[in-house]
Amino acid sequence: MKVWYENPPGTAPAQGLYSHTGNVKGGRLIFVAGQLSVNLKDEVVGKGNFEKQFVQVFSNMGDVLKGLGCDFNSVVKFTTLFVHSQDIEHFMRLRRELFPKLFKGPLYPPNTIMVVDRLVKEDFLFELEAIVAVDD
Picture (tube, helix red, strand yellow):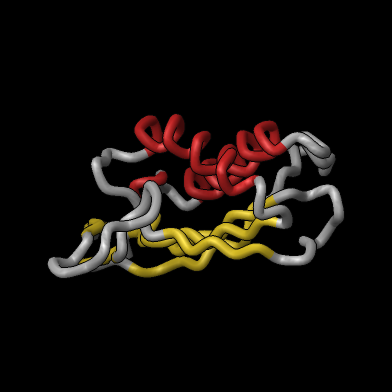
């Protein structure tokens, strides 16, 4: 199984730390539900603090990937939901710091960003879901 990212020739530059396409050869796809800022005690982490929620959400995603027997390099695509558009800039900064530690790089998975009215609980500031490729 192989996952790779690319920006096809003739396409406009990506507007962030992502690629236009995520590709998979072999393996199977798993659709990972949106991860939220919840710890193992079922407590919301970082109420009102985007950076703390960012750390918890990516930690939770890492735990799911580990449970599947893979890591972030198996991510084909992310979808990120925000409740405040102002948090997108914080997300971009934190992602620039984190992604080189999680991915082989230099390209990263496609990511669609959406701003929504709210998530399942008012305390959540953002949610991260993924499509992941794993070996059969």
